[in-house]
Length: 188
Length: 305
Image (tube, rainbow over all chains, first blue to last red; front, side, top):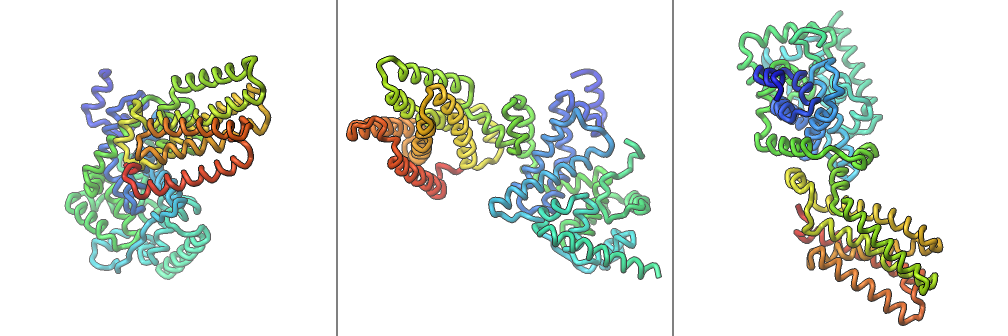
């Protein structure tokens, strides 16, 4: 191990430094990144797909993509955010593959209980848009989260949620319309 | 990184593009982060608040390392360790060859490409011996004593044995370079079997087609061995649970040669086994063998992982 690599490791290296080490073929850097990020990644993907095998495959492929693409990675954002985007797309690929075998493993959208049970939960939706979004039908929320938050395309959202593209589009426009009306009323 | 350390690119909350939600979030989190993490996690796990709130909670938890750890804590350590081993195994495995990269680019999944190219039967030794065997067959067939028809018959008889030998090797006790990967990765044995058989069939067919061209065989003869090849390959897989892969292949190969000789001897036409009427029989037999393999897959533990 080079002195620089040693120094980086003993000082709780940040993600960008670890990616740099991975680009040089350092397996320990991959190991450290995995231990740091695999937990939350698996947990969040699991929320969007009930099949643990599909989730595990997506997690594995995302880390391998990071390993193989380390040399070309440009730190324009957090590594975690990049990893999430890659993993989510791998998850969608896997869901598409499963569906070809007749297995439905799409996002189980559940909820919603009334959100005004206590200050704490209400404070989570700390903007007008957030609060109004949380009041929408859970199916509409799911479409908004997939497109506006995770930045997925209409087709990817359709695969993730297990609904036709047309439904994604109509739910999206309905959600936008409801949000606009709600915010207009708030302002008045 | 363009902005401060608290900048969240993964702003997985409500579509709060104005940024004024961040400050509030940080203030709330600062004095008692652990307590609020626990509370957030509890709500997140209850799974009853709908995607928007869940997403907001994820964003809040993701904003500090302890929150990330809390999220990760919901996944069993054993599962994370299993995935870690699989990833490290694949990352430390030899770099992907040209063939494997090509397959991945063509849309084959990483694991399938690795299994296909790591099929023992595809190693250079096997390919070379296959080509040598074919050359030998061609040389024998084209010796001056053999007529044009006999040449073609010898070729047609040997051709189906090429994929058969490949399959026997692929599932025999031969050393398997990806054995550890296969153990570490939960993989369906049927899928492994199909991937490898397909790989062997495609490679063998390509080699055999070249052989047929070299022999300057008539167009029909160039493909007349295809169905018999499917019959013997599927047949040996179907017999494998009872006899073991190598013995099954030997039995099927012997039976095949015997049938060609018998049919040739009885009808006086040495190419009898390859005539159109018999091709229909091979088609039926290939289908039957495929059905048999499928049924065994369902009822026998042999094909289970």
